[in-house]
Image 1 (cartoon, rainbow, N blue to C red):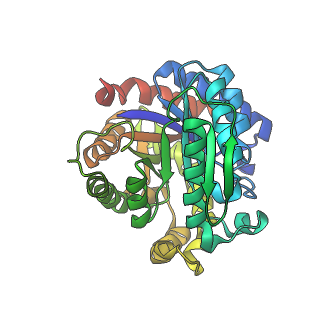
Image 2 (image 1 turned 90 degrees about the vertical axis):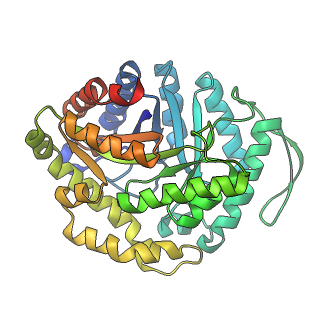
Length: 359
């Protein structure tokens, strides 16, 4: 297994940290993660979500991180393709790959916020078609440096796209996957899947099985050990402490705050009718229930967090491994605990949990 970091750049009022402090603390955390053996640090892109996520320009943050680290891979995920022009995305990805000496990971998706779609002037109902075209263009640009494409949304003739990435044919590609259909589409595209932190584990476990079956169906191969492409990454809020009770005591307020805000951001999708987002509507009742009755106990019962001592963390990570999770995207401290608690938990996790799954 691989153990990665996941950050939203949350700036909750109760934490008493400024945006600049959060940004600097996160960069320092990533530098520590590199020395502790973590594989990749992932950063999201969100807009208009005060306190919950101030990661509105992740490419700039990743560029800064590329100069402060040497081995840690850098995950740009997800880029909501409907908000961006694909040529500019390809140019930024190649630039980041050069700056990081070939350490970039590229995750894409459609986004989920009606407010973002409205602000950027995009049609949510057309998002799947727009995303599919964008991905084809980005792949062309990164692989060959030339784009010749004629579709519904874009029309290019022999564009010369610069610069070229170090990784060839392109940096590893991952797709955000929520609905069963999106897992099937990721398998069809031949890319890995990124599973967000807002789905209960029993759903994710079935989605992983569906993805592996879809991969076999689309690519005509038996289901081997995961390759560079057919990997599953799952985001989980984690806090590890030598004392089980202290872990829960430290995590309770911050984790509940984070997941309440997370579910609050997704609720418009769950409740309103949008073309091609049918699965969110079926998930809506559970999301609403969690929004009203959310607690650390409920989050743990649903497998959406891992909070406890190293033995507890090892047990839960073992369940993920057995179900086929290849990368655990660790949202240490849910991104909102005090930096010293987050770093202590990350160190303990690296020392007493990770060796059981990486050796």
